[in-house]
Image 1 (cartoon, rainbow, N blue to C red):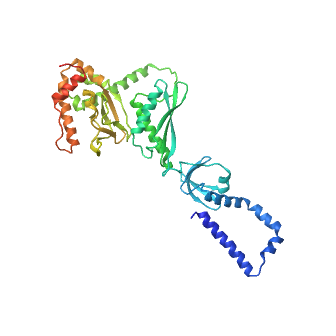
Image 2: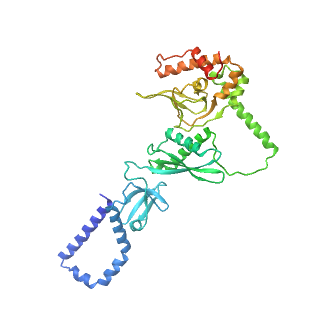
Image 3: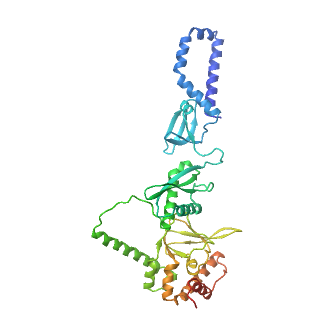
Amino acid sequence: MPQIVEDLAVSGAFVVWVYLSLRMAGLELGSIVATSAVFTGIVVFSMQETLGNILGGVAVQLDNSIRIGDWVRLDDITGRVVEVRWRFTAIETRNRETVIVPNSFLMKNRFTILGSRADEEIRWRRWVWFNISLEHPPTRVCEVLGRALHNADIPLVAREPAPTVVLMDLLNGYGRYAVRYFLTDPKIDDPTDSLVREHCHAALARHGMCIAVPQEERLLISEDDAWRRALQSSELERRRTALARVEIFSVLTEAERNILATHLVPAPFVAGAVMTHQGDVAHWLYLIISGEADVWSESPDKPRQLIATLRSGDVFGEMGMLTGAARSATVTAKTHVDCYRLDKAGLAEILAARPGIAAELSEVLAKRRAELERLRAGNGAGHDESGESILGRIRGFFSLGD
């Protein structure tokens, strides 16, 4: 039972008890009321605000306008209804503040209930904004952000309705995009917005799309060029060091690894993002610099199975880059992952100069493929592919001939 009904019932019972007690004592209330009409008018006039709050509270409860537990927005206040009393309604904000709103105010003004009451759980649509340079086609931007949010497992972001990305405006040199998603717990609004921004920013970075920023012209002094060259040299050394730790590139010379280093592209992923999906075709591999990623085996008739966890220095996707094969497993970011991506063009330059290296790469791939198949089979006997078979696929994919 709502608290206001209990309060009014107790108050009504008290008034009836007073009336009956006075009657039994021989006091006639009718004559008192008739001779004190002015006094009664003054009392009623002075209590009109209180009566308005009482009647407002009754109306709110009877027409079910607000229920305890509802998330509401009133002017600049957003919070959860925790109590409806005869005089006021209490709203608790996300800052742990309790706002007391007179019931008469609710009756006279408009307020918003977050989410639809037709849904079993709250789903509140949120808007996250991005400014992206117009050098990137809007269709491509919406596709990249939409796919990233569809594949990511972000807490409190509803799967249905699915997140959407729309181009809202074309301004001076950039497009203004809105990422719209449905939040299942209004209490965790800003942190969830932050996670959505992180996933979107990482997806944009993976595809070479930059956030639009105000452009300024500045005078650069000569030291800036030297600093920039030092920075580029440091980044190149970081890439060479990362490549030297990879088993499949151990057969390359230092000069060949230097060539590959120039083709590496930064590819960050946010925790929960799908880095590769089983069955997809993509001609590149990923080299993990920091973070952890889970490798999953997916089957229509079996639940998803965790095969392994990749860490700094591990690579995946090498079969796709070297043979053009479809992804044999799904890889998801367990934590925030920083990695480099290497495409087919980077290795094609080396194979064209030294085709014989393909045989050495095929043996390393055969070994790694056998390890993956054993993990997929639960450390049992898996299906192994010979180095000769993989070598033939490499030659065909890179058109090396026999």
